[in-house]
Image (tube, rainbow, N blue to C red; front, side, top):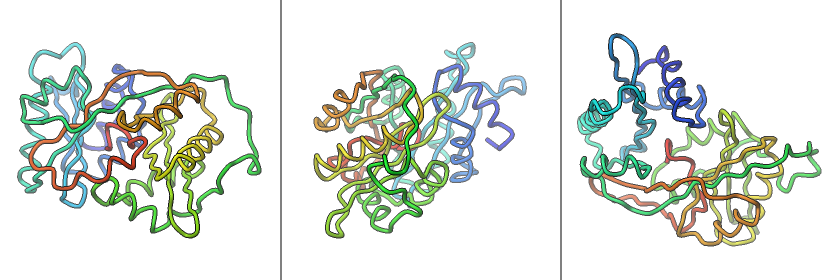
Length: 278
């Protein structure tokens, strides 16, 4: 995949009803210029797959899209096999992804196993009132603190500072963190999608920080539609989202192929960044 293929990728994700933007496709290509692939039929792109390698600890596979008119021809399988072949040449021992129920059987055939469950919840609300700085529950972060990046490395399982800095650069108002007596208690990021703002990663060490981070995101977002991919095992996050008016949209399963030496600390996560990024 090259930059000229982004328009084709956007076409396929729009058919699928996904929320990614051109900026997200650019993040994939910037992170892995040799590791994103397209499938062409008669010179036109009808399938995509992307990957990001994190510290050579594991790779993340996303954006597995196939034009509906060309499904059933093995395009999705061929793209995934090409991705796995590429990652094998890099000697990446672990490949991870978040699977939909429809995609899960295909991934299982390729050697992926389930790790834990995630659910996408969505909020549709009236257009929020404009806020002032005085209304916000946490100060705007001018730059990401080292403790946020280091804690995320522990929680996610690998360093992804470039990706988080990119998210913060594009939507600094959707980034917040909470500390007490110099100790980080939680952080949250957000990004502006095609039709919704997406909360994640959302990490908290206690209930109060989790609630405050969610409230800050709700206050700062100016969109009517909001999306969160929350960790199903985190009952607190589910309760907070329900109280805020979010409701279930779809299920996802975190899966991995190979070893899983760097699982991170999913017990501290309220929500992931997103199935395309991890």
